[in-house]
Length: 247
Image (cartoon, rainbow, N blue to C red; front, side, top):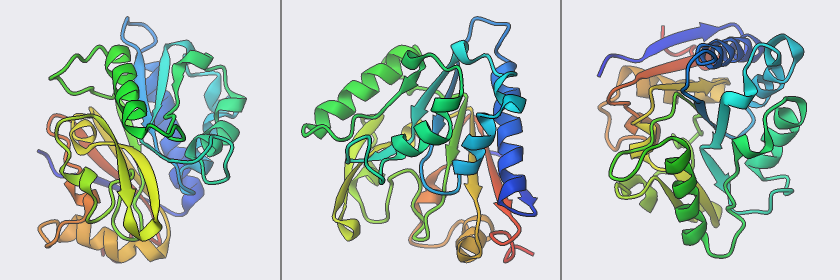
């Protein structure tokens, strides 16, 4: 696997602009062929501005939304109108302002009491949309990930059972320190992606960024460090604060 590429930006606004440009370029590159464009989006605070920019006319009008299918990287097991819901954030910052057909956004129904069935059905939807029957892993064109202060990404937290999952593409995951259930894409799916981009901002992430990019063999490995696309590219978009320990 090639070394990850690293791009540093002055601030979150510049990072978000770069992410929006890359999304628009990648989605538009599929406009003339028969291949739909698939992307998996993360929640959290960092990607919100990126989503808001995508929804502006400058970007949105250049994207062939009917050919775009958007999935969630992960979700909290809360109702979709909860302030904690990743879907709610994505809807308010992006979906309400673009021409994406309703059927082209694939929401994780993590609020359902039967989490296992909800995860299985989400995987079925993912495989059907991306034409990836088992045992093949679904391959996203683009995956956007974040970095938590404990090194987690998606809802793959240190010490949780989902880190070892290698049979399914989507699973529930209980996070003891948060006393909360999550639903998440698993590592095999993240590592099957054609292109994976971490969006990381804030000085509180600088030591983690240094460990992940300068000392990736550190033990125990951080969940984010287990994202290593086998046949794809891995990119890090960092604001200056998050990158400040790399020099």
